[in-house]
Image (cartoon, rainbow, N blue to C red; front, side, top):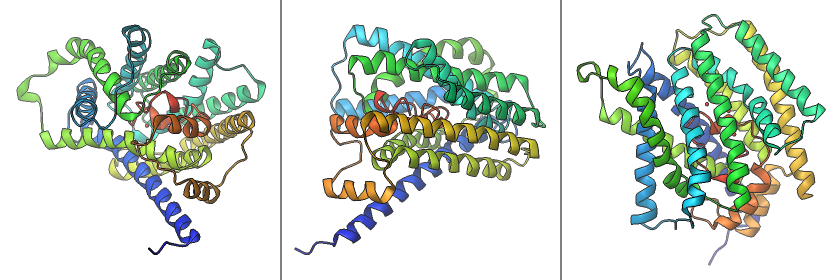
Length: 381
């Protein structure tokens, strides 16, 4: 049987890696723009962010149930009532809150400005980690956080359509997500509980749905008169399907690339999304101060992630790997990076690479924070 030369196999692996990155960038940007379009009073005119989030959670929970209980794609973990009550429920509550506040912000501020505000994610996560004792207050990291905060402040000052309510919702959502990330590390990881994307959806999505039901019943149900609701099954189905697909695409990307590559892809996605949002939504306006402030904030984010990557590599005594080196290693080990692979193997590989930057926003607003405790310290919709 003819076998491809090693060089051609590595090139094939690289091509697959870049394909996964492209899929992630497209899905991540697409879900954010799709959510904005659905919720926008100037476009689809469905101003019910809690309802939209509940649709996503309900759809994800049902899909996960069929994958776990009916098709037996993955086996459920040994989940006791104590672990569920003390770990899953609090994490689900903050997860639901972050999605609720983040989606509500779409009603008041532009996608571009939301992306700029999300540069605050490392600041929020660092503060929560210091408070909960999972990270130490360091001068170099603190200075990076100050730089990020100054950049976001400049960007906010330059926002033409600045809205206090929308900004407050977005910042609150960021801190809720940061707290969720820290709680995941404190509560789940220390108990040794490992969840893959499917089992994460299976346990967390239904609980988040129930948490969202109370604010939905109080805040949105009274205003949802049937005659005023523009409901299109295919719109909501495709929207929820994209959000679900994003969860899996991130997992595939993390399984195939290193932390540095993921962060570069995240930054590239942010700039692409900001540019696309001004095209899709012409009412969005970007000023020079917006760009300058966001560029300053990104400098702080990049330095922060460099320090975190350096810390993890030093702790694990692993050399920094380029994509070709990593692809070569994966080819030799015949590593499989889909979500059917063994969770213990994924824990080892992903934990060392992905536990670097809690600043990543792609676990915040794209509704993809359900990628288990292994990558919760990774995250910027």
